[in-house]
Length: 173
Image (cartoon, rainbow, N blue to C red; front, side):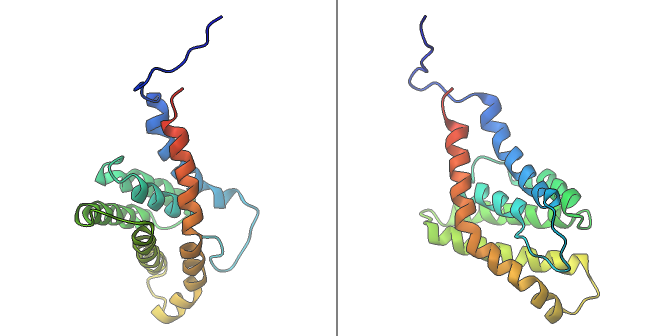
């Protein structure tokens, strides 16, 4: 019996290269709703957003610029935010990251972490403002600040996790 060995240059399966990134973002968006946790303020980091940013910064060329539309819709449906919040903010983020990847030719991990930190802070703050338009900015910022700080500090772990997903995605057979 001969074992099938992948030839040099043989690509990874098509289904895996295209479905793994989308599945990971949607699963990460749905994960907080699966956990038995009740809180009066945001406690968990937005996992869908962190995985989305990690894929965008790791493999900018992989997705089209408009990928924030369907993935943001999935996040809005799972998070309970007003429909259009993540759609708008994730699409703007995708456009920004694509623009920065053309301007900053040699990005390092520190660049990616800074870009992610700015995006996380803006997206979380604007998402909270869209969800509660009549709330005061200062009070809202105090409620969301711990979640923003935790998200920024956890981003390298999510980037590493997405790196392992990417290795699996590109593995031959």
